[in-house]
Image 1 (cartoon, rainbow, N blue to C red):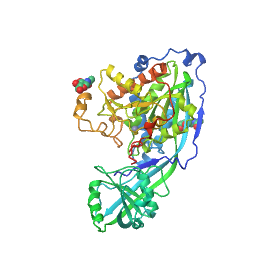
Image 2 (tube, rainbow, N blue to C red):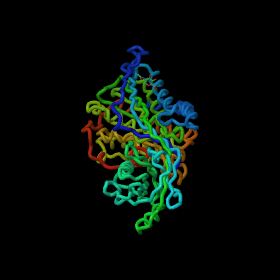
Image 3 (cartoon, protein in one colour):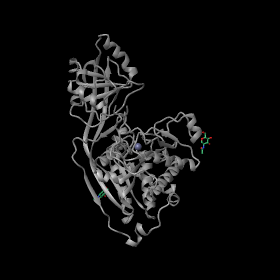
Amino acid sequence: MRPSLILALASQVVAAGIQLPLVLPSTSSPAESSASKALVTSEALQGDIDVKNLLERANHLYELAKLSEGEYSHPTRVIGSKGHIATIDYIYSTIASLGDYYTITNQTFDAVVGNVFESRLVLDGQVPKSASAMSLTPPTYKKQPESGPLVLVENDGCEQVDYPANVHGSIALIRRGTCTFGDKSALAGKAGAVAAVIYNSGEGSLSGTLGVPSQYHIATFGLSSEESGPYIEQLKSGKTVSASAYIDSIVEKIETVNIIAQTNGGDSENCVMLGAHSDSVAEGPGINDDGSGSLTLLEVATQLTKYGVNNCVRFGWWAGEEEGLLGSDYYVAMLSQEENAKIRLFMDYDMLASPNYANQVYDATNEANPTGSQELRDLYIEYYLSNDQNYTLIPFDGRSDYDAFIKHGIPGGGIAAGAEGVKTKEEAEMFGGTAGEWFDPCYHQLCDTVDNLNLKAWELNSKLVAHSVASFATSFKGFPERSTMQSEAHMAVSNWHGPKLVM
Ligand SMILES: *[C@@H]1O[C@H](CO)[C@@H](O)[C@H](O)[C@H]1NC(C)=O
Ligand SMILES: *[C@@H]1O[C@H](CO)[C@@H](O)[C@H](O)[C@H]1NC(C)=O
Ligand SMILES: [Zn+2]
């Protein structure tokens, strides 16, 4: 696995964040403010989307990513980096320059940043190819190699009794499943293991994150089921397998910021909210993921100021999405019941310009999600159909910032142009592009630059974002009223919480 910078929210250790609402000085007379402007229409706002503006913003964003080169030796906008701080400044100053149309809020919160510098696992004298250090793993003791026999943990290793006494001083081998990687690492730590190896129960290698740090976490690796098989057999037949584990890593606390901008015009009891994430992974500049979504929101927010709105429009730029939806989780957790109820729906825009794109709509149904999610899904479908475009439905399973909203009773949905999924032959017929390749072959890599953007997809999807904003800014007629704060479906357990596996 590539060495990576990894972070997660330390919600347990963190008290409340600071919320600083800032009403900007008025730069236009009241007569020019939203109320006296012509009501926005979908057609007008779509017409204001110019791909040249988007591209100009993308070039600027790449320059900002380069500010991290000193520290990371390549462009990145990972939280805590100069590139991310500059991204936050850029979003803030762009909205601030629009005068009194919006109220901007900085929402600061604590996150944990980790970095794995080096790691090595040796089993029976061999280095398994699929072994990789988990994100947010602590180092081995004193950042030195630890050795001891490999000891097989019983069941899925989710109960303390699954850990036999001889795990003490040993390297624990644990099957994936039932509880999170973080839980397994902590239980192994409590049992006195010096390191843990979690092997995949399905096919392929296993990389994931330990999530919220715990004092009991120990150095933890993922391993494929194929490579773990022979060792498990040896252990089951009573043989000893020698092992050595080494991880050099750090895990440290930092502060980062969500930026929220809300129209001063429109009914503030009834808001349409949309969001994108301002951060990238450490490995690259993240111009498609999620520069594309962030910049589309910025451009739509800019163009919207020409018009009046009936309902409030609220934009969110989340930080720490790549580390496990930190910013959006924090934002929704901080909402009072009263504030929660003002958000009629949330629209997630993460990756809108993938080079080998598909028009993907999250398959958010009302059975499994807060009522209204399906009406939103259908608005996207109708848009693609009425523009003579094909679309596909993709799982709505917790991999992006809509997760906290739907878990707290707010209808949600969104579109994407595709990440590391492989395009099928059928999809190549529907959207063009190359079958057998990822939708975004530069997903989470250094090559996610301006050249990685498909401008045709970006323009179409940005117009769709404009359409979605204009539709709900005008009226919620026919859109379900908000109901309770919680809906059962969201208690369902998912292997994902953001882009990394947690279980
Ligand atoms: C909010 O954040 C922006 C961007 O970093 C900064 O320029 C501004 O001063 C902050 N405002 C407040 C009130 O903290
Ligand atoms: C939609 O998909 C069909 C194949 O299923 C294809 O023939 C058609 O050209 C596609 N439409 C567009 C606009 O790409
Ligand atoms: Zn993303």
